[in-house]
Length: 131
Image 1 (cartoon, rainbow, N blue to C red):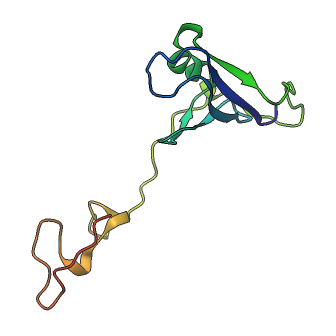
Image 2: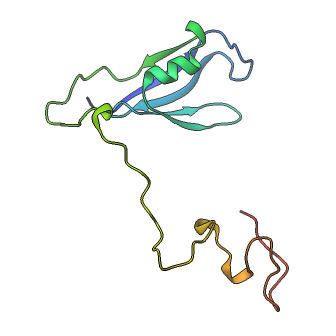
């Protein structure tokens, strides 16, 4: 199977938020996972384990349907992916060495400004950018 595009078509707006007609577009990847992008005033992208999950959550009992843009190409004979159900669980890798102190938020570290909640070092600006 190759990646396959689709749209969500809403016939009845149960929530009163997204309206009717085409409300989202998406792609189903080779392994069955789905990325979904919502249209509208608050566009959002979500990732799902499969199209059945998308329909179960957003289908509203038939009020919203999947319209496939690409035809079903069928299985790809050259692609050998084991089913996810047979793969062993994999924990997140340890991203820190045991010799370094653990930073509680390594992606947003402000070590030069002191620890979170603490006072910045003397001589530093009181201006701080929040991310």
